[in-house]
Length: 285
Image (cartoon, rainbow, N blue to C red; front, top):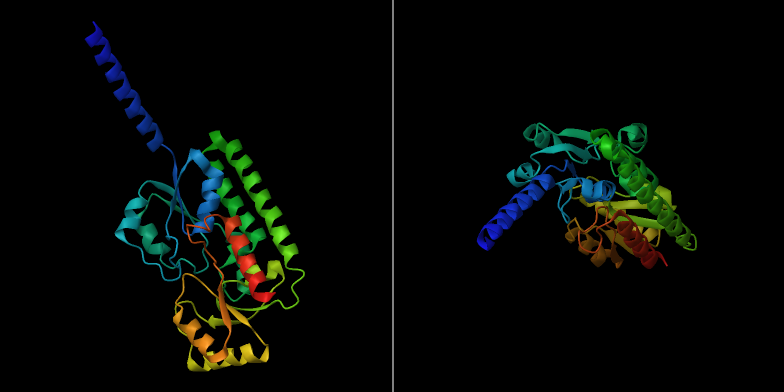
């Protein structure tokens, strides 16, 4: 009798374990191209969804190459959230291999803004813009899974409120900085600068992934000397060779601004904001 009971219990455990795995696999699956959008997706969807990050931390979406591993990881995805406006030029190839996924442009409402900035795609670095991008993610999850719409909406409200509050505090911390001129590695920070009251007076790379010409380097070095720039801001996803040459020629010091997050110490949007503002305060004060 005892042996029969043990067999029944074991059989029940196997069934329940198997059912648990099946239920877990039935979570709707969504993907985001870059870490900030992935943070929004994860925080809004939480345990109701499976979230996938496409461009790994440390890589640049400008130079990212789609591999079979990425394509395999995206099988079964309902939607891919992209920033658009040329940031993810590889998205077409990816979408053609993940045909069941709908590509969602979270920046659709910013078309005129991007045109006014010569096509610059780095919208998420402005906290107000990012909250609107997160709104698109929340609405998509609600439409896809109406049963949990209230859950997604509540998460979005808390997530966006925390971002707005922190961004306001960080903006206030910059008011005491007299010289707000900065030089960045590539033109990733105009929307960030506008929000936080900074002035970008030069960039090392005019076009992401393309080294500047000798004339462009000479012009930048003249700007550094003329404007008495003491610091330039590199990016962890970019080459340090050019920056090292500028250090040698002009004597500037180098700090790092991160447009995406490193996946280790800068894993959230708020953490990314905090880090970048602290670097600017260190460099400009």
